[in-house]
Length: 293
Length: 272
Image 1: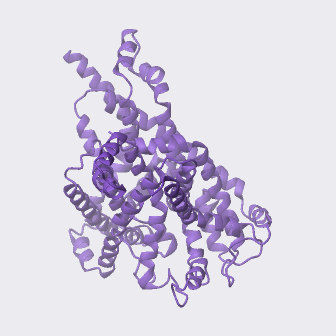
Image 2: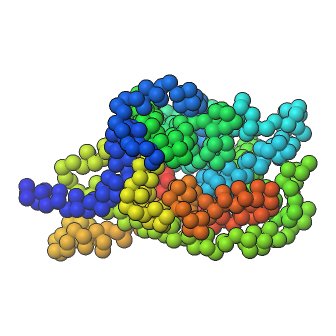
Image 3: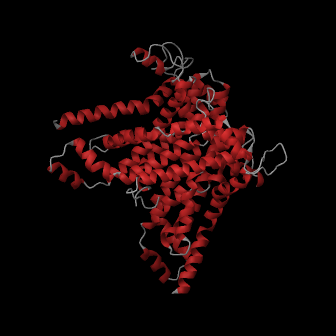
């Protein structure tokens, strides 16, 4: 029996070896190597020196980095908005009416298309003489054209909107899966007890969606802090530093200015923040109970 | 509220939402079919007054699309094959075997989700250079050759396979590898289809990492080439719109034809 267990253990590791090797090199190594790297001034130009915690003290005096952290935190504000809208969307596409599957697919298309394409379309729509300004002017919502992406006060919120628009379909599908797992007789029982549609949502749907809400909140918090593609393509952090998020700043320091050491230190700080926020989300949802995640 | 009114309101909401989600794409399609029109004209061109495919013909002739499409297909195929093989091999023992260190592997996998991609990219860049894989398709593919998410998804699928299957294979004297390839793998085809599709989309749409790794724009995949086109011809809207349509259509078609498996798979990812 014991021997059988041991050989099973050997086989298991043999199976996992190739995958774990790749993960070791491309997933674990960046985390591990980031730590010593963050203690040096490694860049391609000069000789590498050990600089101790200098990068970290520099980071907390780096005005742009602090702004980027703040912008990343502001970005997290889209998390609850996404959850509310996508839950409502899921309830809507959970209706048993003909053609509803077609709508599900339509809402999912932004998820599968590339961020490059999405960013391009929105940059045109949001241009000074673009369709959005035209429609808003016609409707009398704004009185003059707004340069949505090149005005400091609007750019970050516009990017958040685009991120939300692209992601809604994804969360809708996850919530839809949750909704379809709720037994119909629970609704029946509540209806018999005289509950209206709103009370059904508040007292039956939402509590039973709890594990899904936890999971979706968690991945969208991580997604919001790690946001990169749309910001990089559309504004590169500008105008000024108004949309500079932490990922964009790390990318600029690392792969544009080749300050690998400093960028690694910044990455480490952000990782710790994401870790702390994830723990917070878990604590807030202690009863959530998602198994393998 | 009578049922018919409720259905009517539901459809109304569904259509409004569809306009919001699909509108930008339909508008892009419309712009791509209007040769010589400016998207910033006043009032902006929203619906085509005439339809012509000039933009498509011209941009196809200007940009080496067959080259970029071939690059994208190679990168995508490599990425999908790596991901399927590696995540199945890694997930199978996590679902079917009992061994020491199983929960350790699990914890390690989960903890990887907190690192910002920009930081990982810096070390990936150094690693790829060290392996002398810069400017190669392998350099593009290898950092994403296996993902934690796919491992979780496949583990979920393997958990649904009865243990009897492995036992009966053992009884007949088959090796673990043979049991895995001949008995277990055929049963998880739907799961494989899902991670395959997820990776087709991920690799097809990837733009930044290829730009970082590849020095030679001739090796760019479509999405990366598109940023290049946009930079060069920021005022030839019709061309860019047509180029963008060419790059997104394949992936949208793949999605539409496979959405049943895909959506079930995404949904299955957070069950259990």
